[in-house]
Length: 388
Image (cartoon, rainbow, N blue to C red; front, side):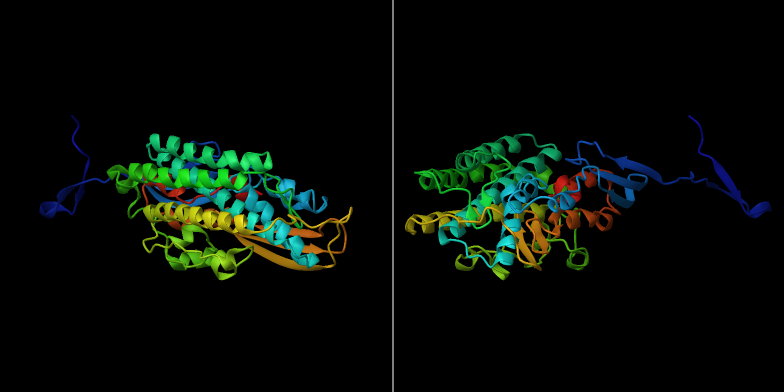
């Protein structure tokens, strides 16, 4: 066994030998763009000092499809088919933002029945989104079982969403002026049963994860995001609310039927990975309650139109408007500029995931590489929503 290297300090009788420290240098590590911990085509360029992250740079654009430019050469009916794809877990919410923006430009009043049906479908879509992350996040930390429970509940809601729209991910059910068609006979009852089943079985997921000591150790106090950083980067949605930012457009700037619903905004103060998971779980329960309230209202409404009759060629008047919605991942904004043509002159999309992922450069430094996976999974982003 070799002796550790030593260097001599001092001269003559006062000289002494001390262990020589090994010289180290930073290592640059690329996580991605194809990597199991990035759940999408995302690249993280990390500078490591040993096992600790010194700096982090999210590198995006690998899925860029130029959606905003494609909007400009399609009419207002065709845009919907593109707009629901950038965040494939929140397709209905994406469609909704586009049609709300166009309806505001037209000054169009949407039938009451369509307003409540849209609100119900938006909350069901939110449930589907949250269930995916509630199942996949523990999977990234080594817990395999929760994803099977989450997908069981997803399939329960997917069945009624597929029945009404014909699609499982890209619903294409919104239309300028309302919805594609009326609700099928008996659909409200089947949806009510589906919501009740998911609520009844949700403790299976909660008990499996929340009391797990490994999950608690990997998430508590890890990846703390403070309120000031959130405000600087424009982070929104469950991630912001887990750090005490009490903002939810459904309550603060109501659209659809949210002004008539008791929207409970779930917040936490810790701002760590565990708090973000807790907010997502509690938000899921709130969405189930809102869905029940919408179902009750729809049962009371008399039969009526579900959409407005539109001209063969739909043109928005010259001008501009900005519509934003509380999508499952955060704030989605749609800035529409029209020159009176059947296609938008400009339709700028502000997606929630883009801001939520940029803040990683502030969060990751100082953490171990092993904690990087836990932090990344708790940011709840979709790569297509970043790149557009």
